[in-house]
Amino acid sequence: CIIMTGGNKAPAALIEIANLRDFPVFETDWLTYMTIQNVVGYLSRKLAPDTSMHGVMLNIYGKGVLITGQSGIGKSELALELIRRGHQLVADDVVDICKVSDDRLVGECPEMVRHFMEIRGIGIIDIRTMYGVSAVARSRSIDLVMNMEQWVQGKAYDRLGLHEEHTTILGVKVPSQTLPVRPGRNIAIIIEVAARNLSLKRMGYSAAKELDKRMQEMIRKRSGQDEE
Image (cartoon, rainbow, N blue to C red; front, side, top):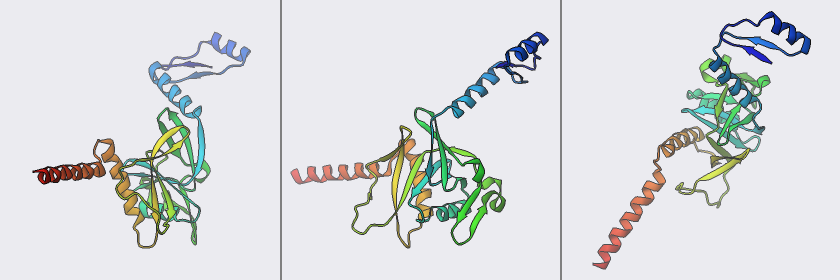
């Protein structure tokens, strides 16, 4: 195709050749650099590797959080509670994921079910109509994967967070955490804390490493006192 930028009109001779050779000619008021930027961005998105995953995705404190887990564990109910607390729904049940760069994934909802959620016992609800346009987001980078699983008695769960876990999607490693579910746990608050904690880690601060550092310093001091 040929794109005429800056509000320029295609010459009659060009239109005649385009009709003869059967190729499109477009006209836009955008300047050339704006046209190139938008076309490249559009093609990068449309031609990017993609996949779909079962789960729920939300925008929590500016972080795209993908919540996974077996069917019936309560992902949609958790998402509904987070929406009620002021966060944004990106997708429920099915999340379309595309790899827009070597280290960045973007998740969004299929067009057919965008803004809709299925709540067992109630049915289908429209989040945008019920909570307003501020309760939904069209797409979001995937920054964190939270995998919900039923609490297993005796299983050793990470309590300090010194060892970081990752989930690989389309060849991109995404920080992930396992979230054991059992009665009495406020899962919504835990998800919010996980999103805030990720922000702190990206700014270079890790509470677990800071605590470990303090413990190591205390051990060294005590060792020095014992030697004296």
